[in-house]
Image 1 (tube, rainbow, N blue to C red):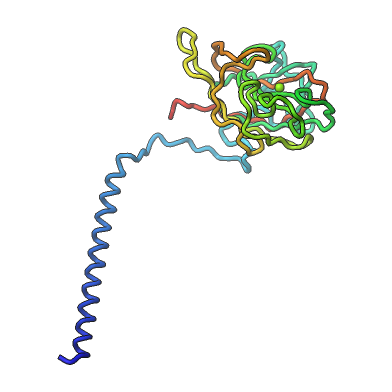
Image 2 (image 1 turned 90 degrees about the horizontal axis):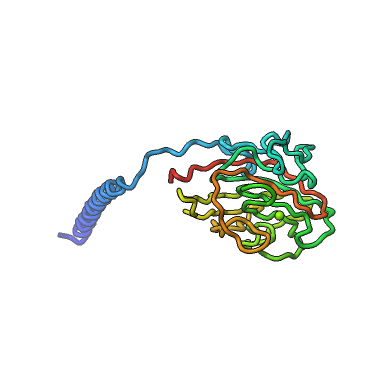
Length: 275
Ligand code: MG
């Protein structure tokens, strides 16, 4: 056999073997994939399917299943806290509403357990005061009665304004220091996106599971599933008193700053039992 013929035969044999090896590895890969697919099946869930929710044009816009608490027109979804038979008497104009300090706190007519809440507020520009006296308001995640009873996530002008850190914007008032100060300048609109898990109480009215809250301020995480110690207390430590579904409340604080304004408020009640 001459050298040329030998080389040709060697080449042919080599490529034939390679091809056979390729086919074999493809076959083995196919069997392996099929086996993995079979093993993966038992951990795949196909029901219940999550409901379809159509998002708004921007993350600030209400999704299709949200309850609109303020759409720029009226305060029909709200009532006075002082006298819950009376309407909320804060001022609505130009698509926003403004705190009426004399009118006192307002709360939603509807009661909620767990929810996702979006709200927007604007601090007054001419608040020539300091600390807690500078554009103070707040959102009570469950209003448990008159005045400031409930669980307050603080709203305050904390742009270049020092105060005790467990009382600044994004704190659960006097319970926790927020992870950041994300306040915008007064006069600019700011957003809160809040996930609230209401506390649960057992049949004999003992605490079964504490409240939890996540707060995102202007897109910045301030509280990450914080476990509350109880209802907000101005004096002394927080503690729980039993309650069920509750309104959401906004604070008319007695400071001397000009009042804050709010707009675009919506809420999505959550059924956490499904998970
Ligand atoms: Mg406050």
